[in-house]
Length: 154
Image (cartoon, rainbow, N blue to C red; front, side, top):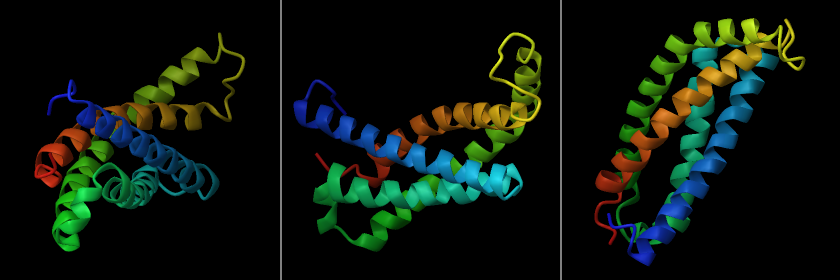
């Protein structure tokens, strides 16, 4: 991948924009399921992540890599899903490891930041952990999909 190539630079920007839309979907549904419906954060994260993956596959295939529409749908979907399942595993592991420390951090920041209250410190901590997990998995998803799923696209 050569980002000096203008076509590849545009592809990278499109991939990033699709990723941002997937991130909004992921966080919106994560908060809906975990904060409104009180589903365990790991389950809420798995569901929201899966919805974001569907969004991302559709838009990357249609917009970022439209040339891939000529290839077998099931083949590309399978590769994308394998990358995403590994990403989901990484996301869940990081979320689980960082959740309690993130909540503790937000509770300790309550004293200095007026927008953090006892009632929203868990939600803020959950989202902070989810944010860090998302950043790590973003890099995994991009490079794994670019060099495996969409490797034939020049």
